[in-house]
Image (cartoon, rainbow, N blue to C red; front, side):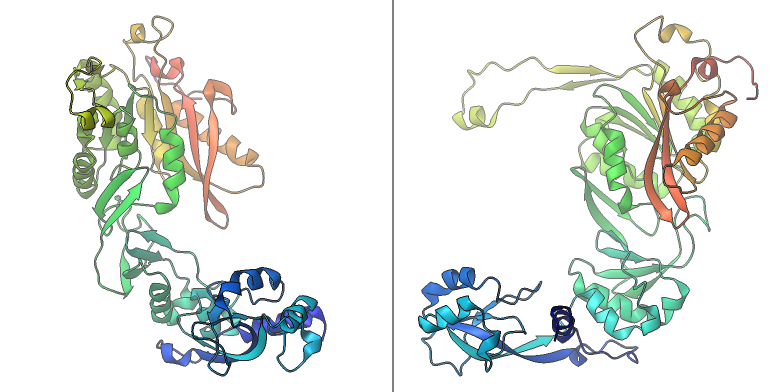
Amino acid sequence: MSDSAQTTHSAEMFRPPINRAMRTLDRSFFKKELNLASACVPDKKNIASCQKDLSRDILKLERLPSIRPAPSTVNADSGARCLLLRPEVRTDDESTWSSRLHGLVKAQQVLVAPYRLQLSYDYWNYHDIMSAILPESEQDEIPVGFSVVGHVAHLNLREHYLPYKSLIASVLMDKNPTIRTVINKIDDVGEENEFRTFRYEVLAGPDEMNVEIKEQECLFRFDYSKVYWNTRLNTEHGRLVAKFRPGEAVCDVMAGVGPFVLPAAKKKIWVWANDLNPESHKSLVENSKRNKVIDFVRPFCEDGHSFIRTSTSRLLTSSRQITIQPKRSRSARSARTTSVQLPPPEILEEPKTFSHFVLNLPATATTFLPNFVGLHRGHEHLFHPNTEVKLPMIHVYCFSTKSDDNKAEEEKICREVSVQLGYEIGKVGKEEMEIWDVRDVAPQKRMFCASFRLPGEVAFRTEDKGV
């Protein structure tokens, strides 16, 4: 038998038994007994050195420890251990033994003996079990992609997998101990309402959608059935928040439960956060208090179109200060002394203008851009060159097609932004324009973030004009 054939045979040995007629999960069906060779080490003090010497002979599989109690058939001291050997090594055929194994046997440090290895349902992972259950025609795309939101696993099963949905959910929950509920989305996000929530069915576990999530050192709690949350945007949340600087004011027009808001507020950034969904607004307030950043957060529940203008005008007349008392170091507290001179309190004042606007509603966010036309008309004196203050950066999320270099998509997005603003925004690089590839959302669909500095020609415009 060739080396490749041996490898294939060995892999087949450790796969679970097949039952493609199974429709209700029967865990007891998944059992297997394998006859292997083992290197028994009578003196357990030698186990580490023998393991090193036999590194090429030892069976190495994920989730399967190679060191085991010596089989009872071996005459060895109590507590003796053995090393499981690769299937190619046979107890009754010394020609399959390596020179190192021969040497250790000759030196009476190990004894080659049969070992009966028993595998059960608990050994195999989700993909292993599903490969043994699903029809061979469905093996190319076994459902492995799912979002985890707290204790909830969120599936989006294709139609041809629906007959197996209960099996999929049961196995998935078995193999992921932190998951207590498995749901399947039965419509597109936002199909039923403007709050980006969705209808779902519970496939396994209780219908308990109050979840808890930690992201960017913040704790979020919310009812996942009533608000929008996307775990796959974790990296994007961190990327954008990293652009904000302490002391700046940020306007999050579609804030949701606060994935941009709370991490920004933790950086001592003033955030005006809005969401049209009352449940999102409620969770945002509660999470701001829970994370002790409510002093930096102004939560609203308004229409996003009007909020762009009303928040800008409100900020001009707002007057907020926060005094942050210095904290004693741990060593000073443990010394219980009052002689340590503390620095003066830090007094933070809210700016009069926003440095950033965030519009994270990819399906329609670009249609909110006309609200920036004339946004700062009459307040030219607040901005460069009259002061050091620059016009705000706009971060607008959108969907587009996919290509290898995104050049065509960049042109489309720049054109769409230009149309909405009534101003030729130009190519990437102009007006500090950046098109960021966020993530793929479908085979031919990609999510982007277009970031650009609001042009003065738009911000101070006195009348509408097309591109």
